[in-house]
Each structure stands twice: as C-alpha cells, then as structure tokens.
Image 1 (tube, rainbow, N blue to C red):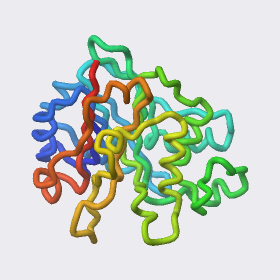
Image 2 (image 1 turned 180 degrees about the vertical axis):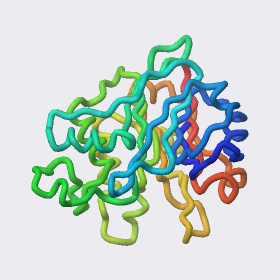
Image 3 (image 1 turned 120 degrees about the vertical axis):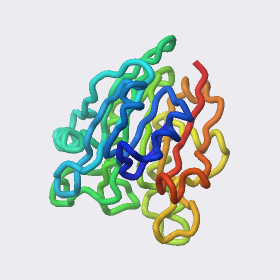
Image 4 (image 1 turned 45 degrees about the vertical axis):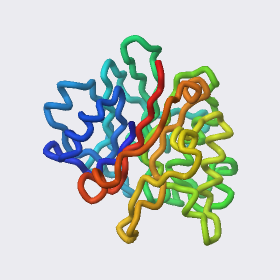
Length: 260
C-alpha cells in the first residue's frame, strides 16, 4: 500500500487503521512518529524529504515490510547535474530492496514529490531537453525520477514497484491549458510501468481531497508496477472515504493485491 498519512504522529488513528489492513509492504509519506505496535510488527526504513530551501522536513517517508529491507539509497544518473539533484533529493526519491518470505526480492522506489518546482537557478543553465516536460516550464522532483528510470528502463521481468505521492494528476490539465500531468504519466507508461489503480479500476480514481474542494477529486497517489507484477495484480483500490477523509488524512491509501 501507499499512503500520505498527513503528518501522522505515534498516537494517530492511522496506525490502527493500517494494522487492520495488514499490508505486507507499506510506503508512507508525511509520518511524524511511529508507535511500538508498528515497529514491533514491521521492519522499518526511514528517509527524510527536504524543504524547498534544502532543510529537512519535519516529517519522514517510512517504508514498512513484513520481512526484511535494505538501507535506502539515492537514485543514480550518469548525467552530473541530474546525479547532483538526485543526491540532494535522496529523501524524496529513495530506492531499496524489500524481502517478503517466500517471494523474490522486490526493488522499491519510494516517492514523495513536492508540490513546488526545483529552483530554476539550479538547472536553468543545463541541457534539460528530455528531462523537463514539454508542457511545463518548470522542473519537478518527479522529473528526476523519470530521468533516472529512463537511463536504465525497468525490464518487464523485474520485480520493481515505484510508489508514493507524486503530486500530479491528469485532471489538473482539464479545462485549462495542459501543464504536463498526462504527459508525465504517459512517459512512465512508455518505460513499461503500469499505474496499478488505473489498470485495476479502468478509470481515474481520485485519492486526494484538497482544502478548497468539497470532494475527493484528484489522484496524487500511485503504485506503478512492471509487467511481471502487473500481470500478477489481483486488484487495486483505495480506502473508504468515510473511514479516512476528515479523520485520518486528506489522502486515501492505495492498496494493491498482488499474487505471489
């Protein structure tokens, strides 16, 4: 599962809800504290995203596994300026390997792409064609993810999961000049990654309720799978709005059931 927990503390109701779902792997964003009931049940890996000015956020990205987990490490690139940014945003884009007993190791990329663009002064002098979206004037952390994956496209047979809060949705392009949201999702699909929620539901399934919105209207949260894993997907859905929105988070968890 992947879920932005909206700065959940150790005493949040998020944890009873999560334990009831009993995931094998949980990729969680905006976590400010963990209770003993979680740390005694799961192996835990913690990384810290950064603020726009480069300071550590007050919350972390947490990966929970019923099994083993390797230490998180940054994504890599052979292009020096992209490599530098991937290192800078290592807490926003982290790769690791998880091991659930009885199945092959799963490579996991945990994503927390912020809603603000990367400072133009950092990259404006670089050759950004093919990295920056054609329909967006800015460069985003999600673009760094695509750039790293494009250098070494995932093979169809890999057990690779890319999951988290990408802060983008094709509905943001509707009724206005497109700003590259669908363009970005198309780029990931072209690399062989399948949006498990869209694949399972057959249509856009919202996961986020904005502060100015009366309804859950946009999908910001994703679980992307390689061909091998998408072929094993039994179902993918979201948590019940009545149980989560206004009580636990402004994001719904995305929950994928993959046969072993």
